[in-house]
Image: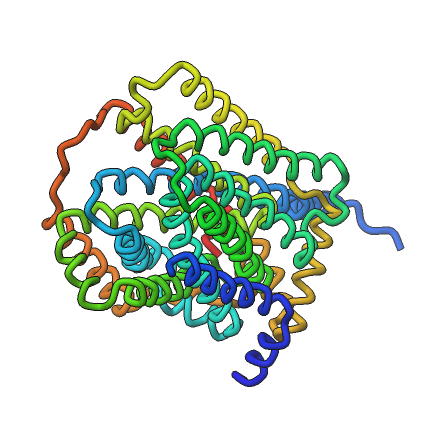
Length: 34
Length: 444
């Protein structure tokens, strides 16, 4: 049931906190390196 | 109706056995707490020892390439020793039960790779003495996430709160003293950029523990988690290296560094053993306690630097005072956390968080409960190792041996006496913790 568990992940607030931090980290790294 | 007298001895045996079983059940959470604390200590020793081989690499290799080679060592190491403990069939079985955890593990690996790259820039821009304490704050963020998301330290009482939070803060102060003492680098021009990089690394690492705890509240085996973690880590690190250096310059750097490839990969090999124990610590004592305990790796790294590689030789008395003071503070912090293990009320809160995960991801509660207690589900058969497992182990080991034949030992100060002492202590911790893990959980 890939749709089931994938939708459970995507609607889980715990998932979006690390994703947001990862995106922020990559942007910060780009700023630092640039 | 009266029972015949002849049945009473049997009844007493049954009652006695029942009492024994009940006593075992009530003592098991305590056993797992001790196991988690021991795993945290062992993780600190091995993560600290992982710095030793990297000290054999002199200048001439760019920091991003050093990081990429170490991560390659981590990836290969996952398919050597741990593959003997948990085969690919077991990993597949874990994945079938909780496929969503693959995403969490890969995400954690990506966070680790970006954080590690940031530390390189932080050290370059502001020096180790300021950078290390800033990113070491990740344990405080781990405590915050553990409290908000996973019910850690809920109903724990002020004494345990003081032990965990106070211990983590004391460790941060100790870490700052050690970093100042071991710093040989003057702060450079880009101070704000360096502070941003160090704080960024701390936030990334502190948040990386959300997937860790998530996995263990869903019953995943730490060795399965590390498998997917290394895929995320290597993929992200390779993307960063190619993105920042370009494919052709990266290849030329790797060819130029072939003499030191083995030492860096050996660092990765030692690191992955430390990481596995850190995973077990996160599983059995939670991230609010497990992460500060494994952050004692700085103390072990300093011991290797000072005793084996002769760092700080000729330093002033005040430097040595900082080292002794910082070390004592770190040990005090570790002790405070170790003696603040979770009691019944807090553990009930952990169970509640685990139940929430079971319901969200449709994982059977009996499976999650059994795995949180380090047991197999009744009727569960441990998958056997296959030819595929042995082939993976052979290829990974063969690659390590191949790179070892290319390696050259650099000419540098190396004290064998303290090195043997530290190696013995590190192996003893591995033996004690590994044996305890096997006896208590059979690595479940």
